[in-house]
Length: 195
Image (cartoon, rainbow, N blue to C red):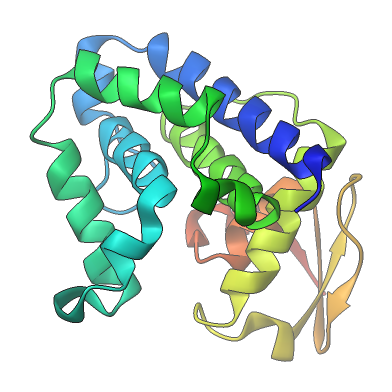
């Protein structure tokens, strides 16, 4: 995988860690996110778990994304904030070989979950264009399990990072909002324009 994606993965994970490091203990442990039933600490545990994704997703007892994700979150809940954050910084600054091999994909995942946490807290940020592209790709990938939206809608991004995709009813919105909506975050639908 290209060094550019390795760099972008490290940058986006670092941005995410900077965000969660600023949270109060209560926010870290209990604030809502756009990921149902996950607090920011759980999102962090998931991002850390992706550095060893094979061990979470490919076990005979966890041959599903939901079970693999649940294992990551359950393990994260056994750790203190300091332990979890320390592991997060390690994953941000020195991603595993597995993570580096799929950096183009994991950058979008990190960006998606960063937005999940920020939006759950009612915050926002300026999204770099390379990250917006990764975020949009992530939304397109996850649009299939979350309702096959691109078979029913043609999404038209109004900000840099995405390009029109799909067929059917036109939907206009920011690249970020479209990405989140495609990936099943229905709460952002109010930000979109449906024709």
